[in-house]
Length: 281
Image (cartoon, rainbow, N blue to C red; front, side, top):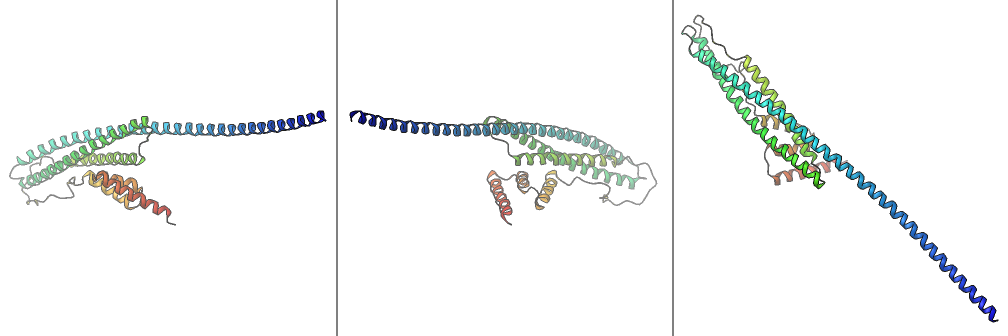
């Protein structure tokens, strides 16, 4: 009996030990599964981090390249402005020489002399208007240079802080540069056209009826369009057509020199309107 009791107790102990061993094995397997799952999650998180870092690096590189391109465009626009100023100086000298020659004409050519003086005065007015346009363009160029420098600073800061430059700012500056280049090309073209139509010293001719003292508006064109006004007109036209409303709204605020608070209010309103337009079926 004692032996039977001992064998029975030993059998129960073995069974209990077996159950305990099975539970430990099951716990170990569950732990290994959990570790594998955590390892896969960690690898996925590391892959996402690497992809985000690569995308951020590419974005920063693109931002710096865009800033450099804008600086090159600004340099070209500045060279065009200097060339236009040189052309204005030459045209002014020619008009002054023509006015002096017209003032020394004979009495027999009084009518032609008077017409030459009127044309010379009209040319002087055109030159004054052109100089005013060039001065406005110069101020505009300096403002654009400041914006490009700010954009470059923002791109450099973004390289260290992980922030990227706003796409709306890029669009606004690119539109500034493109439209400014068009304005300078238009001014240069009109200056060349005005120089070809510049008055020449009148030759002696028999007396003729006195011409009208009013200059022909079709012969001499004055530079009445200010670059900012023309630019704002084009921007408002595109804005009313619904093209890139948020970017154009930012450009309009910049041209009209709104405060930061006003610009933020307008951009919030444009964002809400765009969101409502997307939600509306």
